Amino acid sequence: MGSAEPKTPPTYVVTSADHALRIAVMLQLEGRLTVSQVAERLGVARSTAHRLLQTLVYRDFAVQDDQRVYHPGPVLELATHSQSRTSQLRAAALPHLQRLVDVVGESANLAIRTGDTTRFIASVECRQALRVGSREGMVFPAHRTTAGLVLLAELQPAEVDDLYAAERYVQRPDDRPDLATLRGRLTRVRRAGFALNNGLSERGIVAIGVPVRDADGTALAGLSVSMPAVRYDRHQLPALVATLQGAAGAIEAGGD
Image (cartoon, rainbow, N blue to C red; front, side, top):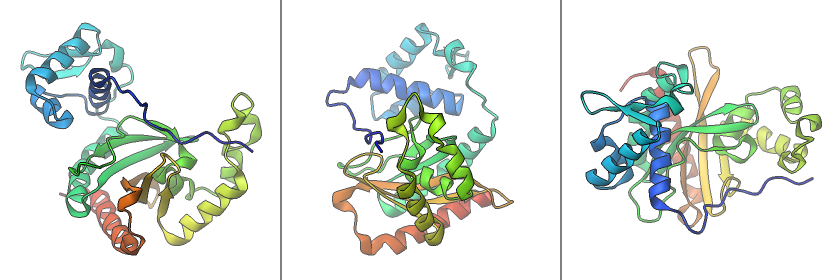
């Protein structure tokens, strides 16, 4: 049975377009941005950030208020809910993602599951020259992501079977995972309490993830660190998992 290939970044990326799309995602997820924030997050000059934001304003992806703060424009506002549970979770998690990056020296992500996909709602890049870039706003098949595996492992076997029932994939049969392989992976995740993803999402990338739960113990999201495979040392796995679990606990506690 076939399955979709891991995502591979395009050989040629139009930098200005990539930056504009990232800003649009940030506006959608965060609700407000300043020129300085955009410049810092993208690693560009303020003048470049200003030009990008003005282009988004021109195309109705953003609006600017009297304090020169940018907000989602008409194109984005229908999909933007600044006080939604997802945005609140993201806001609570961001400081802890930054601390996680500071501790482990690798990029960190927070993702949620919707059906058979996961969406990255927050990313913090590390500062190493060779690093995993921001995945914020990106959507991947759940069975190919660390967070997706962590969250799928919370389901009962019958729920997994229903989610990946063949009739759901009549129009896209190659996207359906091999269920025997997936069941085995999810069993290992349940037993271990974490997920190890070696190249499932993107070739040459290793990620480790744990769940973030609410007060009732329900898994809301997956917290992960990602790194180039050449820098992964399996002997460091227990320490990475412990650090991730500590960060997840801090997010759950809701404190700084």
